[in-house]
Length: 323
Image 1: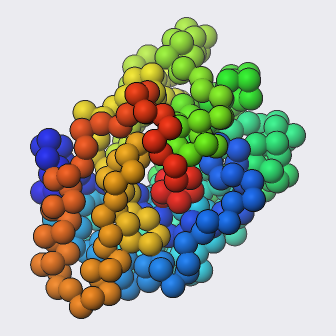
Image 2: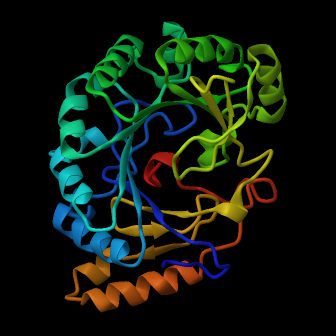
Image 3: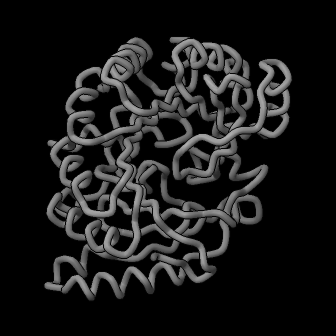
């Protein structure tokens, strides 16, 4: 069992397979951003598989493939197949912006990906263009329909709630997801990089109570390893989650770490510290060496983020962190 220094069980890894993205969402990646990791610093599929096999041997259960935009990594379904086959891994999911989901839904499903999180902040075409800096709403909606047809166990829509930008789109998104049996998740903006700090924070606690009343929702639970708190319809057919790192942080139940494409293990989204595994992997280490370093890293995982107390401290951009 993987435990951090506070006794929390760590069984969930968000794995970044690329820091590239085909969008430039206003809360994620600055316009003109050029600070990409050199591709020779990316972990290879063999390195990823080896490292995650060690993680799994110590109790890792869930892996989420993230980016940037993960489908931009060449041969991603092959990596998904290899990770899905690791002993001990019982859940392999993917986060995507959906622009190429129509092409990749089928190969990813065959490779062993069972759940999808698709970023979609509005159903208004011009608003999506403004946020993403590309006219992509038709492609995303097409990709979602392709994913439905493939029979993924769960499809979640991730919507970043931004005051003055997407706050008046929320009810329409609820209706859209209700009609298609998608799980909707509303996410508060986080002060990760200047883009996150300037996105327009919206407290989701009042939104939660308003939606509870309007749509007759009740408290509920949805399977998954993430931090969302859910409301559900009384018949269980619709679920909406609220990810509230600012208004109601969930650090006491944190069960996850993030592995960057360069092999840096990020212990907390709201802290700058990371642990380098790439150098160790490329220096002839044993699996025992990897295990020792992993246990030491988790022991140093902080108790909580400081988004409220120190919002300026995270200087990296969200796309470089991994989901």
